[in-house]
Image 1 (cartoon, rainbow, N blue to C red):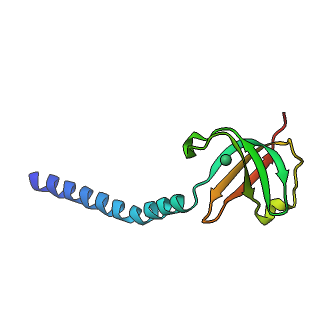
Image 2: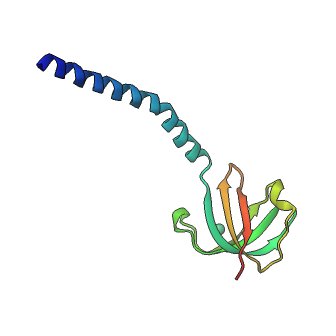
Image 3: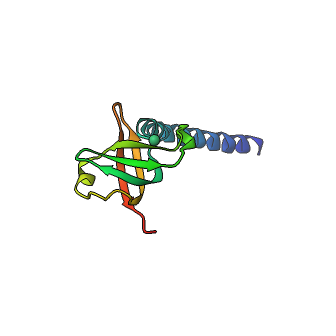
Length: 111
Ligand SMILES: [Cu+2]
């Protein structure tokens, strides 16, 4: 009886250890992806639209230790076609690249 119980426990441990090892590569890739391209989403107001960038006045962003400011974000090709006039309230998300803060999404807000 004791021997059967020990065998059962060993099998459970082995299965658990195998499952854990199998899950590790996925967890690792997920963490790496987050570090390389963390996406931030905030709200602000359009101040100036240019061909390759847009000025946005935004509130303070504690997560990045930014005060409220007006700054430029780089426009990716899928957004440049939809110019918005100054004064438009927007929700936007962006990633930090090596050379700029690049918008990922830009959505006008109805207020
Ligand atoms: Cu800023």
